[in-house]
Length: 138
Image (cartoon, rainbow, N blue to C red; front, top):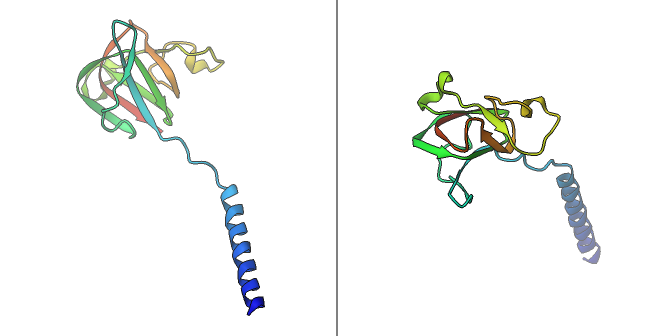
């Protein structure tokens, strides 16, 4: 009886060890894709517009109304573009500038219509701009 209990304990220990080793080889979950919009008030306090639907999805999406936006952040997408009219009409695309730390990435040196990953995208034509739709792709 004692040897049977001993074998069971050894078997449980080996199974736990194997399960632990398997979890060490797994990569951590990829960050969730999302685009975030921020407004700013007269005291320079920024506020995220967190109630926006579909901000984790790929594709073109309209806001319910046109909103004045100060800053945009996007993670997990290859690129995102911002528009001041509905349905992501190419003629209404907004040029954006990177205001974060200067990097050697050529896509963050000049104004662009395609925002790569980052949290410091500002509008190139003023402090705030009207946003009505956006489009993101992976």
